[in-house]
Image 1 (cartoon, rainbow, N blue to C red):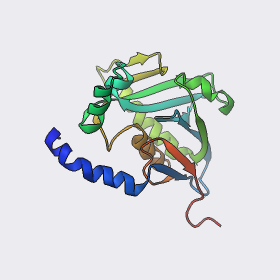
Image 2: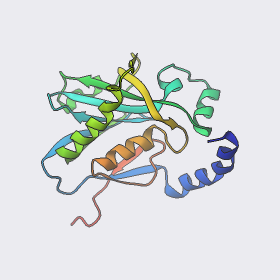
Image 3: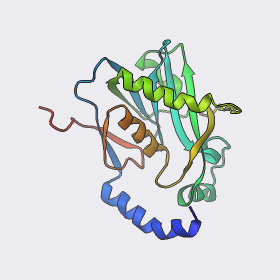
Image 4: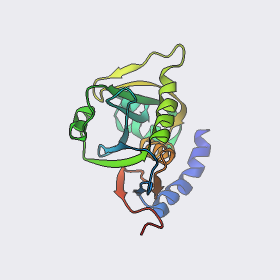
Length: 200
């Protein structure tokens, strides 16, 4: 997308964010089939998702702007440019075979945790999402880049990062694929668990 086109659409996008609210209200599925535990991690500015591994342990996934998360370019200009027009993005993954307790989730996130949201989802949906995300790491010619700051390996993601496709919105997309209803716009990583619609 051209920078000029982004500038024209920016007021509409900001209006949509304001009207939609800045909090993500998440409603887990009422009665998932063969449920497993998954965890939404709130790190303050961004969120990540933790899924169980088939072989045991946990795996954490996080999406972000490549320059910001991987290359450490955190100055103001880099942050503004990442939001106002599409830039390179990355998918992060951290595999933890030795961790399977929610009490140890802080060990998965060296950047810090503000809150953990335990959720339940159908095992089939979890497996499908895990396969989809892992496929990015299995492509030929792809060498992951390790970030000690986040304890994640990052690979390039095919869709660019910007205002309407940033880390928290992508995490919300992952939740929807697990059958979790997400209401509102969790742009600032503000989350709240609510009852599903129609719940008694």
